[in-house]
View 1 (tube, one colour):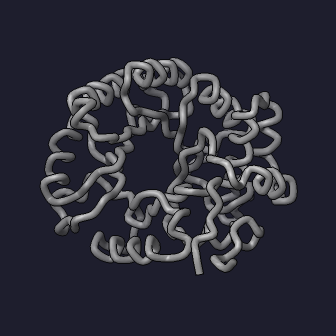
View 2 (tube, rainbow, N blue to C red):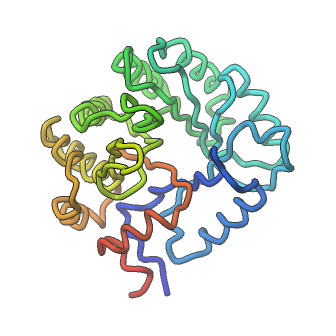
Length: 285
């Protein structure tokens, strides 16, 4: 038995089992995460995502994790220091910089100031993901992120592609334009919400049409190869795995461009779909 996760999927799925509405506590989530990281599919996993609001709750086990900034950006410095003192080694921080319809620039500036205060040397590779709404001010916000990266800060955008209302689900063309905008600025990105299955599908209970994580992966490969918005949107719009599987297989041994990854409440679910599609062989040679 050995890991058979191709490089294309390495670190693709963060463990989001602690994010609301989580039925488990931190101790149980850490134990389960360690089980996953000791398994044959360990290379598929990114970080365990820990909400910043954990501060003041149950004791924090000593672990390495990604921090979800569910507190105001201004409160991040104190929160980070408390978690570090408790033994949490923070790999990256994800923080929302604005609500939908708000100007993201003030929040971006606050996050940039936080990064600069950390100090590039002391940061030790700490990455920041600025959650930017897919609404007014997006392109200017991406320009600001690109400028910060050019200045040496390890910051990148994060986008929500789902939620509790239809308008929170971007169309394939809208998401394709965002992916190409990130490509043009050499910005890696993370996604959150809505990525429940490998391929695009409509939830029978809500009627919302969700993006597929395999669609996004193939779309970003196409974008990185110079694909135009229409071509990238076509990959995002596919509701059957057939047009996605072959491009994924063709690029399986190379690094994944642009798309850093996404969180899943149960990391076994995306793994199972990739195995079912023959893109990961189940751990056996």
